[in-house]
Image (tube, rainbow, N blue to C red; front, side, top):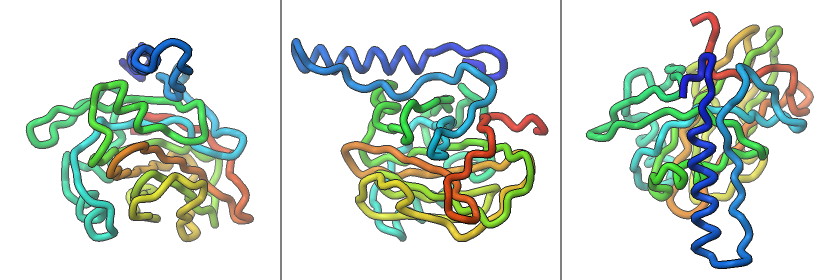
Length: 231
């Protein structure tokens, strides 16, 4: 897939195939597994009605173990690939982690949350004892002061805005809307880069993220892209 100009729904095809396989394995009459991730079809998108960010670049999972504060912090601070806290990759870019070559995938979610289990399962990748990296760009029409990043994840996760760590939640937990909320911060006019690292122990895994304004209402006055036009 080439995000700049052409969109080939390879991930969507994989997700559809995974859903059909689940149905076949479950027998006649089984419900189709929900396919919640698709390949972006436009250059930019907008947040949902409740402000959740729908578009992300996801890196194929990296093997890790443990969900406590110290173990997760050590896992996300380890350098797996160059500039991992500041990089804005392109769709289909590849990085080498250990002896494995991993690929970045651009996705849109049809729900408020991003289902990492669907993502990894569709690609034939592990879903347990893994670390997922996620990146997106929030484009603001003007400087926005006093906003907060509000997140939820299954399980632990750590988040950065414009290279600064702003929030982390830990332990074996379910995704709850606004489970973790950052201190007040400023989104600058133009592109703001959000990075996330989500660590899953086992079972389902997903995350959700939105910004809250100075009155703690969902922020919607921005667009979402996966490339910074100024870079």
